[in-house]
Image 1 (cartoon, rainbow, N blue to C red):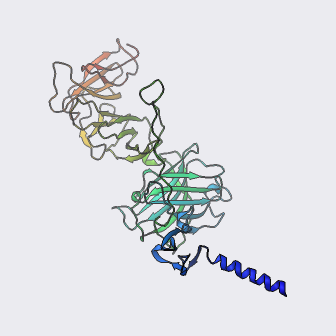
Image 2 (cartoon, one colour):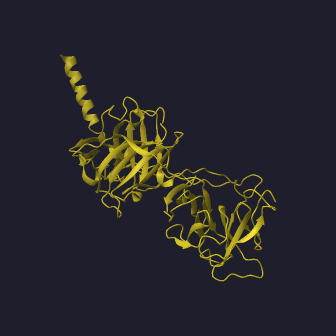
Image 3 (spheres, one colour):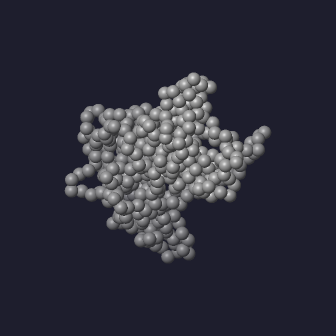
Amino acid sequence: MKYFTKHRLSMASLLLALAGLLLTFSLSGLAVGAARNGRGLQLISGPDAGLATEGAGKAVPLVDPPTCTLPGTLIVTDPAGDQTGAPANTQLDLRSVSIAEPCFADGLNKLVFTIKVTDLASVPANGHWKVNFVPPTLPASVTAYFVEMTSDQNGNVTYGYGTVGTTSTTLGTADDGSFTADGTIKITVANSKVGNPTVGQAITTIQGQTQLLVGAAGTGLLAGIDTTTVTGTTPAYTLVGHASCTCPAPTPTPTPSATPGSGSGTPRYQNYNPPPTNSFNGGEPSIGVNWLTGKVMYLASFAAIRVGFDDCSSPARDTWTNTNAPAAVSLDPILFTDHIRLPGDTTPNRTFVSQLTGQDSITFTTDDDGVTYLPSQGGGIPSGVDHQTIGAGPYHAPLLPTVYPNAVYYCSQDVAASFCARSDDGGTTFGAGTPIYNAAQCTGIHGHVKVAPDGTVYVPNRDC
């Protein structure tokens, strides 16, 4: 009996000691803190729930709220094995969608979507793993935003975000993305890119969705494999922000060191792939760069695409936008950007989007990287039926520019001859086509027209 009494006293002493430690618990869904000070325990709730006070008001951090740590808040679940084609397609069998708002070193407000599928030990070709949602504010003609992971025909994945309207449009690359073999997909996107929802606002109608491209890219259809949609429900998430989260320290910028034996950095190349959707699909690509804006213009079939690069990260983040250049028919797409300017000349760089018709070309020009387009004559008459090319550069002496700073040339080839025509108004109209050689002088496909600094015009052909 004495032993029992002694043991009880020891347990009581232990409990009293524990009372002096920092405690946290959850009450009615709100974080509540407890701390020790000279006056006993002090409970803290409401906006200061992430901190407790010790002694004379000293702040002591508590455990981060669940939204600070991935996967965050569970939004919706989905039964196993309900995907189309089950028991196949387990990589597209949705299990859950969660959302978190951790604090990032750059301090930006970002949402992290975690999509869980049964497994991703192997990634199927042409797959789409997507979360659709509706923020409080939507642009005109847009009904929702989405984030997604997509795979190409080789199973290589990319991460993007975009809008849903009449069609789904990918707006750019997600801030971050990853997946693991157990079927966990994480996609990070800044709030500002998806309607800019703020703390206290809710994103609604949250839907997980998986799809497979059936048929050839550009002509196939996206077949639905699984969805978390349940009739009569509209899953939602109310933003809480990351003010109560532990924020990582920003990575210090290293001091660059000189390259041994060289006064400059080493050039390098980085591959960028367009989002694997029909909006960015096409053949026979050509490319041009606007040296004033830094935008890249890229034409493949009818898709005239503007690509922007954010150099704040390395490698730079890319954003792809289909500018929807007017076009009706084409035997051969060609794009050219005229960026040659004299020092101090701020005339906008002009991009030409040309579609071959067989006798001439349907051409449109843009001075604002595809925001607006103006029609062009297309080329001079007569012209060849194939392999059109557009180039521009300074006039050869003694000619001088009048309306536009450079002469613009349209060249093409026929069965027995090739032609070039010149425009003096920036490609709006062209003069008559002039033969540059005949079948007795050159044969075969010629190259693209180029203009030298002295105004000499070259059309290469390996046969002559």
